[in-house]
Length: 308
Image (cartoon, rainbow, N blue to C red):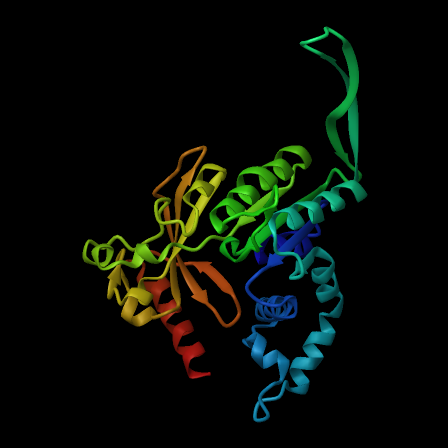
């Protein structure tokens, strides 16, 4: 989420970015604090997590210097708030679809066309108005819909019956999000965790722990709906000492591996190692493990954040 925002705001691009972040895992206030934390780190090199920004610790209140920096970037934070709308009050598939459909109706025109329908029994011909194409008021607006994460949605009901979680996920992914993508040109981004079975003893034994399409949790059919599927893997979580030439014992939880694991246009198997700082939600591509100078810089960065 953060990189597209920075690209648009920092470079004053002639596009308008609007992100609807359906935060199913935590309250919207917490997500906004995370965003502020990330921006303070990128703008000023200040490393404060969202808990620090709350000033919940009596021994570590937010300093006047940090408050002054927040005031300094007040206009930027306002732009951030205008760009991202965190939604924690809508959780079910139809509610998410209806929320986004209302936004489309208020920010564009749905053009209609007449079609003729023939009654097969009587031969009678009737005309009906049907949807033709959608025209947004702002053609330079890019609308991104983030669902985080899809297994936490509430279950819908249909014909008086409560749908299972599997059915509700299919309803959201295969019907509603595809409709929002195809009809309005919106960009759905779905976060989905791997199933518990992916971390079975057998998978550990054969080193098959990284994300796969077969390991998608609660509903594997979502993989069919996506244009691109990315997997994010933490070797440290599984006590793997070395991974793709990187010393995981040294990195600990500050490394992730991003992999294209599927998509309509191929490219599967491409892996990108990333430096990761969870305190400020920061990712950056790592140099190759045999790049001595580059890795020394990373080692200095690791020492810095661990000494703070």
